[in-house]
Amino acid sequence: MSEATMTTTTNQTEQTNMLRLVRYAARNADVATSKRDAAIREANRAGASLREISAESGISHMSVKRIIERSAE
Image (cartoon, rainbow, N blue to C red; front, side, top):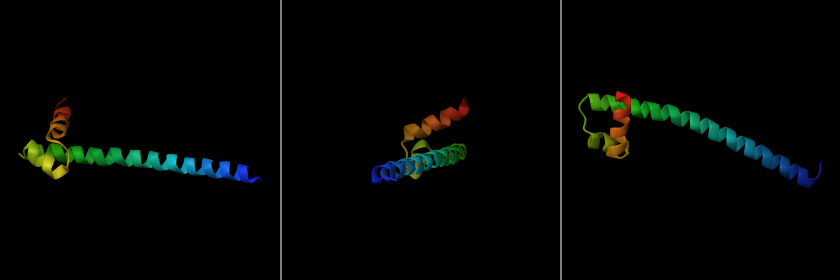
């Protein structure tokens, strides 16, 4: 096998591995986001303010509001 063919094969393998990593990360991000959103809704039901939830979660209070409003739909 020539050096150029080996380099191409190595690059394709690396690309395939990186795409698998992206797919895995995307799947896990969905799960983490779902858990975060459920915790936000629960904190809201328990009486925490949007700004309190925002401070603890690290996202804006408007994002917190959207998450809560989405659950009401």
